[in-house]
Structure formats: C-alpha cells, structure tokens
Image (cartoon, rainbow, N blue to C red; front, side, top):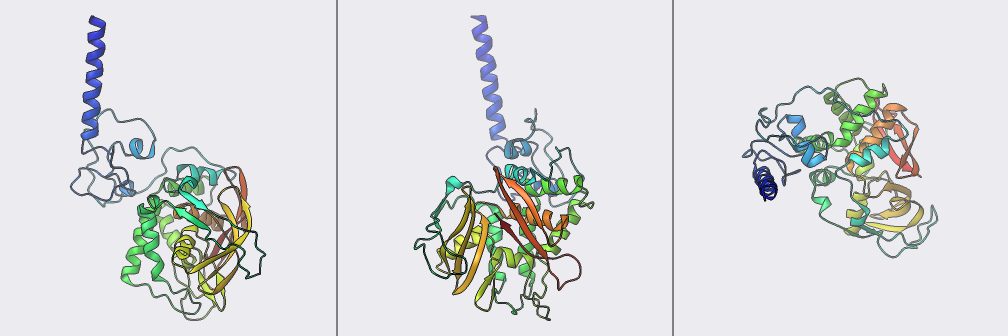
Length: 354
C-alpha cells in the first residue's frame, strides 16, 4: 500500500510539473516558430537566436536538440533585437560528401513529398515545344507548410522584379526591407548555421556569421547588368528564384515553389519531363507566358535556405564550376557561374544537374 501511495504521489507530481511547464509563458512548448510577441517574456521564432531572446527550451522544444532545462526560471533577459557577436558553437563537422544530406536533415522548412502530389506526364524531347503532358506538373500542394515565414517572405519578393532582360529593377526602401526580412529568416535557419560551420571547418570562409549574411546578400541580391550595359536588370536571386525573359526564351527559373505558383496562375505550362531521379529531382521543359525553357531542373520540396546554401557553398568553393552532392542516396551536381560583368564574385546562376 505504501509503495502504491508513493508511486501515485510521484505520478501526481510529474503531472503537476508537466502542467506547469506547458502553461509557462517562458516555454516554447506549443509556441514553436510563432511570430514575435513582445507580450511574452521570451521568443520562439526563427530569429530568436539572432536577437538573444529565445526561451530556455527553444532548442529542445523546437529543434529537438539537447535536454529539457530543469527549470523555466531565468529565461533569456536579453533585450529584444539586440544582436550578440556570433561564434561557432559545438557541432559535428560535416564532409563535402554528406553536406547536402546534413542540410536536408536539419531543415525545418523542407516540404515533405507526402504534402506534394505531382504528375510528371510523358517524356518530352529537349528543344521541342510540343506539349506531351496535358496535366499540370503539380496536382496538389498542401498549403499549410507554405504558410511558414520563410515561404511567405520568399513570395513577397517576387513582385519586386521585372523579368524582362534590359528592364531595370530599382530597389526601393520597401524592397530592401523585404529582402532583409527574408535574409533574417534564412540566416536564422539551422540550414545556414550548418552551412556556416561547414564553410569555416573546410577553410572556405573565415569571417563571422554576420559577415556571411553580408556576403550572401552580395552574391544573391546585389543588382547588376546581366548584359553588361548600364541598366541593373538582374541579380542571382532574380535569375534563380524568379526567372527572366531573353527574347523568346526563359532563363533561370530554378525554384519549385515559383513554378507551382505560376502554374496555378496559368502562366507556366508544363510540357513534359526529361529526367527524374528519385521522387523529387526533376528535369523538364515548359513555357512561361509564351517564352520557352528548353531544359529546367529543381529539387521538389526544397526550402529557400537549402537552395541558397548549396549555391553559396558551391560558388565560394569553386566559382564558375560544378559541385557534386548526394541527397537521400541520389547523386547530383550544382552548376553555378560567376557573373562576368561585375567585379568580385556575384552569382549569375545556380541550378541542379542530375
């Protein structure tokens, strides 16, 4: 009887403790990746590490790392939006052979193929504009993952760009704010934390993480003239994540979400597949607003942080070259080029080759 009473008392104590933790405003349980809430004593969003205001259990509750703090007392008291200098934390070094897999594993924003239904249709011939697949490539995409901040921030950037080659893309104050919001979210992702550690470990990069953010802005967002004229009509981001027109052809346009949304809107017409590797690596041909893309490719379900991480790793490792990677047992390359019309390294393009 005494043993039963002791066990019952222990279970009751655990129940009360669990209830206390679940109801504690200083916990991330039930609050992971919510927006900034200054009414709370600590935060559980993507960029709380940047500003030093994460709840004590953020890593445990939201990123499934470490052990749960034994006490919720003493949650971060760092003032909101005050950035501390970045230093490398403890981590397991990653080799070039498994960096893509490592990034994929830590990515909280990748979209599972269970949430995406595709219809690859019939095999097309590269260079032919014949439509051999009458259905859309994307039959269905679960809208829930696309409500995550990184996808909302990505989609907010698309209308900042005129895809026509030679048409300048002036960056307004509002555009710059949207870019900074997007980069804040991307840089706070575990994907970019792993990317930073990899670049430093491999002696490819030696600056701080804050400096890496500036480098990524320069690589991807700094506008330049793709044709070498005076009109700053392009950037690495526009080329890869938005797409561009050159006469009657499509250039760039290497993002699966962009294609899905343009296909939904009736602007992109999937003509057929050229090659499929595994369930989510696809090479295909299509038209976009009447412009023809002979061959395109992307990894379906990849997050913006994942795509930018691989492109950044590749161009910093070997500019204007091809980098081999492996993902989920499938080999592929990232082919990227440095923009020849600019001084210093700037991304002209980065795309997958299967």
